[in-house]
Length: 132
Image (cartoon, rainbow, N blue to C red; front, side, top):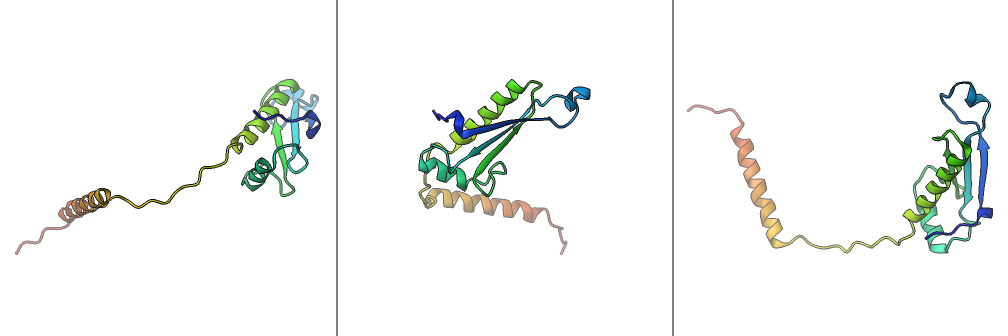
């Protein structure tokens, strides 16, 4: 479980985009969440994997920016933004398992070759027939 201090998260209320009638122009219900990876209290291995992610929500300066505007209330958008931050961090929490290179078995190589030969014979039958 990831534990992030509230002082490390910067949340700002902004006006939501899109349809919503007259209310959208008056109420700042969307949330703009910013989380600086380098300045956080996360362990270094998680920081490193987060910074290595190719995610559009992570800026070149190493700041996670999440905009939540799916809900009508500011509180729901705040919870949504926080949940998305946690899920992003949890996605890199476990170290990836390194793949060990293996060779195909003899049986699988033979199976591939017989299937290939069979497919070639099937395709050869599709060609034009010439009469002698």
